[in-house]
Length: 94
Image (cartoon, rainbow, N blue to C red; front, side):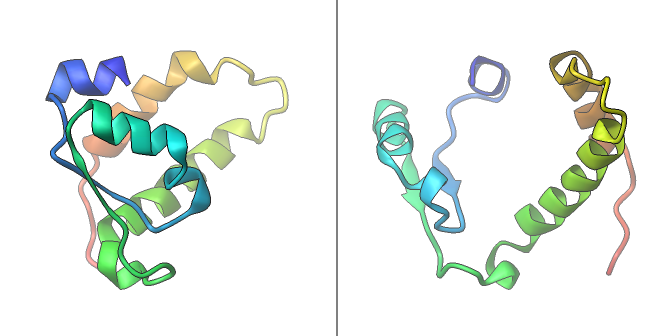
């Protein structure tokens, strides 16, 4: 969280898909602490949050490729490089 808030500033709102892990007390307290607003569109409507859904699909592919090697347990060291690779890759229209 420090990396996000200190690098990009406090977010005004957080958009989630209504998943239970993103609507619990911890997130509620975080939203209050940051004086933000939480938006939960209708669950299971990917077209409402298409960019997030597309990112998650790409991210899962990236992580799966890395985790295919069972000896990899240092994800905390490579995750910033994966984020950089994702951010510097040209997006394609689907």
